[in-house]
Length: 207
Image (tube, rainbow, N blue to C red; front, side, top):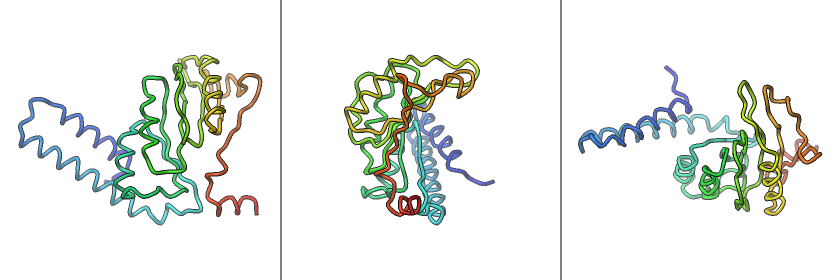
C-alpha cells in the first residue's frame, strides 16, 4: 500500500476527531496522540523523499481549507525560517465564516501567499488582505451550482485594489465552468503576482 499525503491528512483528522471523545481514558488518549504523531512523522518522510521533485524551477501551489494545520506544519517543517519562494501557500475562503483562514495564512513566513475565494458562497465583508500576493475569485460550477452575487466579487476586487493584491476573476460559474463567462463589472480581471515568481523562472520565461 502506498501512503499519500492526502490520505495521511484524512487519517490525521480522523485521529483528532477521536481525541474529542470524552469517554476516552488517559491511557487511550495517550495512544491516540502517539498515533497522530506517527502520521505527522510519516508525512515528513514523504515530504523529505520528495525534495528532489520540489525543484526550484517549478512553482508549487499548496491550497487547503485546513489552514491552522498548514501553519503549524510549515512552522515545524522550516523551523520558523522562510518558506522557499517557489512553494506558494494558499487557503480557500468561501464566506465570512471562514475568514480566520486568512489570518492563519498570514502567520506563515512566506512571500508567496494566496487566497482562493472560489467557490464564493457568501459575502466576505471587509477583510485585511495586506501581505497576500494573489486573490482568485469565482463562482461555483456543476449541477446544482449556487449563485454568486456580483457585489460579493466586486467588494473583493475593491479590497484587493486597496491592499495591493493581484486580483484574478476566474468565472461566474453555473452548470458548466464557462456558463457565465469571465466579465466582472464589464471587464476581465487577470491579475497575477509576477513579482513573487522566482527570478530564475521569470528569466526562463522572458529569455
